[in-house]
Length: 148
Ligand code: RB5
Image 1 (cartoon, rainbow, N blue to C red):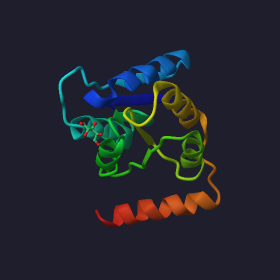
Image 2: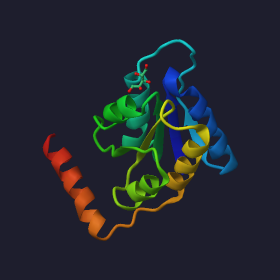
Image 3: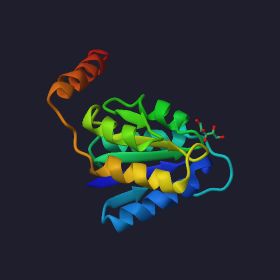
């Protein structure tokens, strides 16, 4: 699996924590920034990560900002992206099993690095359950495809 990761200035510390996790898990990753301590705009980081997932350059994306909300909104505008904003371990598992999410968003002003690491590990290792969930995810894709 290959993962693209990025954060704005509000998510730099958790981004580093998740990069350390991916190193520990021997997961290949590409770090798309930000290289900054000054204020940047989260869509400038969410969209490149989401596009890499959507075009198949990477398998998954992870995005961190202050709340995770801006990143998740922006990522979900990219066709083919199912981004979940997750701040608990139950949802981390459920959104992989039920929604086959391909991008994870978290907020550094909401949770600490330990919980973020646990969430990311669950999300990276939990498979999609398929079955009844498959047709539900397909309905989202069908809607998206009908928009052109
Ligand atoms: C930046 O101040 C903050 O708005 C951003 O990190 C994020 O929380 C937006 O949703």
